[in-house]
Image 1: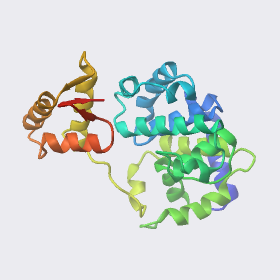
Image 2: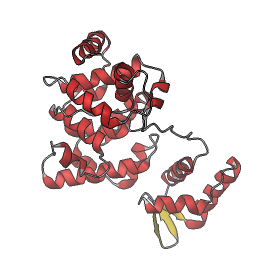
Image 3: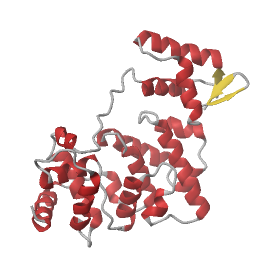
Image 4: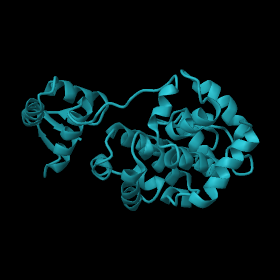
Length: 271
């Protein structure tokens, strides 16, 4: 498979199959950042309505930076991984403080919650940066075309090819095309098991993170901003026992305190 032939296959297909996703209709780095953080480990179909709801609540990076934590978590509810929301807000505050949005992937990567992939995806989609990057879908495309019989393939090997394949004139559309081809044509998720970095995502139901989510939702549902320690601990423990899960309420709460999602003060918990 040559780079030229590969590009032709991908773009010929993409011309007739491009997905019209809301975050593709903007070059605003804030809106693109929101979409990238939301899309981490979350299906596109779940992200679309939340993305639109989030931007309605926080239409600008300044609005997000000064948003009350309780409102932020309330709007984020349903996406899981609560720490992502807090990191997103921390990143927004730093950008507002700097009075400019970083364009360079290395500088973007220094922001909270932004790793190598997100930094390069944001730089590409907002600023047409031509650095290659890979996610689950893009990885599947390169494994299929360039490593069809190989196992334990490293991302380093994939990126060496991916960088050569980037369309310099349109890196944004090139990566969109790779996303769509991986998601819509290569639906066999087993292709990714040939990656050296493959990790199967654990089930959410009755997992430790599911009880974290229940605890946060419980706090959000309360009419007052805080509840007694005993009440929250009893609620979580009851949920754990009914699910026959191997956890303890204090474990769950400790994890939420550690991630600064929940606060403890004067014998009560709050967001």
